[in-house]
Length: 197
Image (cartoon, rainbow, N blue to C red; front, side):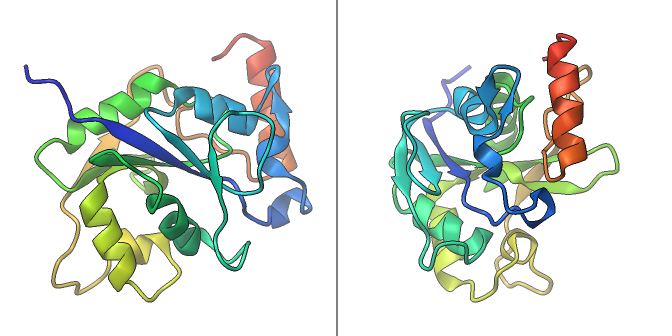
């Protein structure tokens, strides 16, 4: 089998975390590392983090303009720093994400514009996907909206993304688990203490 083309990563880590009371969500710890460090450890290639600069993890840091203006401007800023033919688009708050999950998405994207993870209810997790970099940049340039769903799956679009929908592998149901609330963070910490990883 031919080797897959290289993939860089864009991690969105600059949101306002309203449901977390405005805390620095990616900087919160779970299992001995910050949420952002855990995601970066799973991210392939050159890692671009859209958010405030930090000492860790080591990465290229950029900001959307203005800061906090939403996931589409953030992705636009991050995609501009990607060098590889493929881009992994990741949220900065998924403590159970592993490199093999991103690799599975990259493999599923072969021959298409991309691939996105879907949860147990069949909903696309737009901040857990892999996309052809050129196609992603072209879509971001043409898209006037603010919704990731509108970017990747717009209704009535003349040139929609052709993407694979990948279910979380058996035994890896937590891959797309994100920490949007204090309760979800507490659950992640509990699972990591118990060795669920």
